[in-house]
Amino acid sequence: MLIHNAHLGYCTNIHPGDEWDEHFKHLRHNLPLVKNRVSPHDHFGAGLRLSAAAAITLERKSEFDRFASFLSDHGLYVFTLNGFPFGRFGGQRVKENVYRPDWRSAQRLEYTRNLGRLLARLFYHCPAGNRPVCGSISTVALGFRRDFTCPEDYEAAANNLVQSVIDFRKIKEETGFTLVLSLEPEPECAIETTAEFINFMNTYVFHEKYRRKIEKESGPTGENWQKTIREHLGICLDGCHMAVMFEDPRESIRELRSAGIRIGKIQVSAGLQADFMRDYGGQREALNDFVDPVYLHQVVEDRNGVIRRYLDLPEALEAIKNETTANPEDQRRWRIHYHLPLFYGDGFFKKNGQRVDGLQTTAPYTSQLLALHKEEPLTDHFEVETYTFHTLPAELRNMPVDEAISKELFWTIREMSQ
Figure 1 (cartoon, helix red, strand yellow):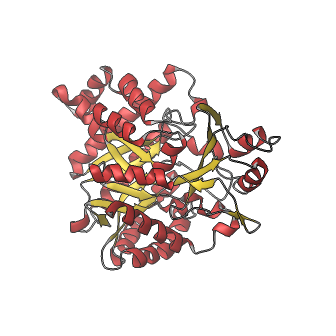
Figure 2 (tube, rainbow, N blue to C red; figure 1 turned 30 degrees about the vertical axis):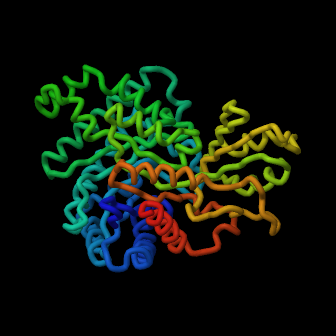
Figure 3 (cartoon, helix red, strand yellow; figure 1 turned 90 degrees about the vertical axis):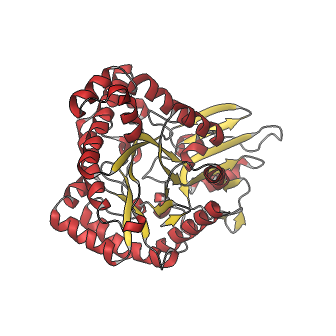
């Protein structure tokens, strides 16, 4: 749906299904419910998550036509795709495998090419009044950080990303639709922050050798070869990820504007924050409830200005297992990559019926990011993304998933409209 000329939806990675048939079953059930709650009288946009296998299935004319009819019948449209998880996502152990295959591989390139073709086809089915100016596809920020060990790894990824730029330019020439591949920095990715993304672009992508590659495969561009890259390759800002990395949102936006980097979309999400104020034991016990076997929950600690990193929440908890109380002068904060519903307020988590002091969400950070958009538009694609709903502690899953999604969308609408 349109909120002040920006498209807002939610990412369907919250719904199960790596194979298209299963995922479509959950879409048929949930998308109309959310639409009727949030946008009963207007068209409603969705951020579609497709695995590589699902994308291949949806390319079949019969499957595509069935999905397009479903969208039309229910007043729905797709304006963005989530192309981050290539394969299995949710239900079983994912952890670091969510980043693989990475951007060094031909598999990742071909998967993204398929997504580009699909999104362009879906644009033909967008209602005329809601048809986006461009389509966005979010993707992994190269790959798992520990897999990228030398400059050659980054060069290989850059080469495939430029090939995607060429692919998307050809799609634009054929269809008239502009697609933006948007890398999503995340803790423990090869690119974790806005600054690292800009550095990667300047070091590996805006390289003279790619002038020749773009001109050879797409035709002469004169001095505009970098403009071609900027048009089709940008960044996806995730509010949870930025908060976990302790980024200053205003400074990050300033740096992106200065570098001429396009923001393909913003994922409206919040993470988990723990401020260790008194009793480590109580907070540690509560945080244990957020350990899950499916996803990585990276932790970044700021302790009196000193940053320490943990790959996953169990590792961080192990590091403080023998600590009991906090020194009053000790300022210790964890930010944890665990997507939490945006509407959770203060005291959202209770253990044994008692509020756990010091646990909160990073939703105020996300509010800052949206406030910057209100000052000067950042993008026209916004996507609520709380894919971890099904792994939350049981007492936090006290409503149907469609109701939780709707409440997050209402929260976002309010923040974008104030």
